[in-house]
Image 1: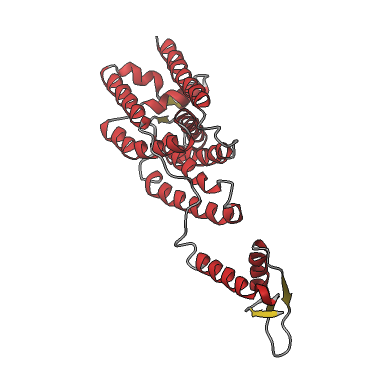
Image 2: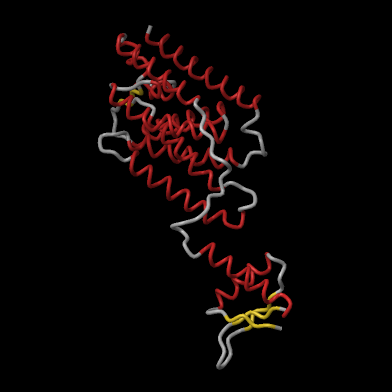
Length: 288
């Protein structure tokens, strides 16, 4: 038998698991008088064991500042530009028809009186060009990445639902009365879905918690940068981000290929169109 010295019981246990993953049997030798902790391996496995431990240390010594990502190849879906064009058209139409914005804005009094659809319609409206530009500048990128990762229809629908959940959080947490509008909750939902990618199951399962925490930390830093700006609807941003994180975790654990299935994306995209049309029809009928 050959002996590999270790610094502590914790390190002995960690290294023994590393060796076990490489099918190398190791026995933990407790510290004794004059000797510290150690690992005993068969002599013929000694060099292989040292190589495995050396690779393990090199791989983990720089965490959390430097590490490989467990995500599949990143794709960007330019379909997010179509979403941006739709928001621009809504803003243009609402600028020439003031009643249009009044019909869709998230007015707390109207929502609590039964006009629930305002939680959805408010996402398509913006206060001014600067508000619209702020959401589009980051929204096109984040939604493009989400749609590329989760599927065009599936990703956009999930972000839309996360944005609606953010508006519900805004209703619950903001002082009344309150008026809200804008797609920022949906954009923060997309950010949460991207952070959820670090829980991707598969060959990196052993490191899933480490990668999850790193991905979540990166998402939180971006949320702090973009979602906590003074004068914005912070509850809607927070609700959208958390909802996007939850939806992302759910979707990413769907059967392999499910979210990229053309039929699934067609169904998701169709449902999204129906929701947008139906909620705005309710809003305009009520206003009329």
